[in-house]
Length: 150
Image (cartoon, rainbow, N blue to C red):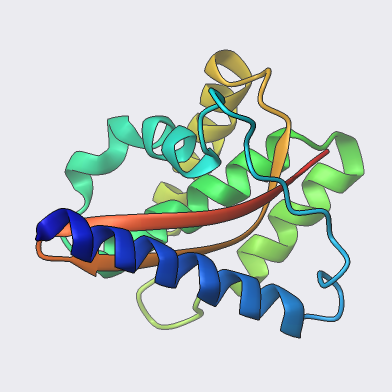
């Protein structure tokens, strides 16, 4: 029964992502690629990518924050020079500007570590992450990701 619920949740995540992409004028014509048989899904790769940091996650909200930082670092690692800096600046500008700014240096440090991790261990994976969705089933987080080749 749990597997059936999990499969339905995964299908629901994929449908939701496809609807969001079709609704976004900038992304509606993007080439969405399903991995060929035998190739690991990008969501599974990203879960391996963030594995060293998963123990610090205590809620769905924190898991989603980790995924957003990881996706930003992943995509930034695929860019060079000004394009990389521009993506990182956009990310920093999107961070909440509430009174609690003490975590900002931690985010910067995590971004730098994740970029190095991507370049070292996942350098051959050239998929750009376009969108994602996190859901929760029981005490497990499910990640669905849409990517496109660079």
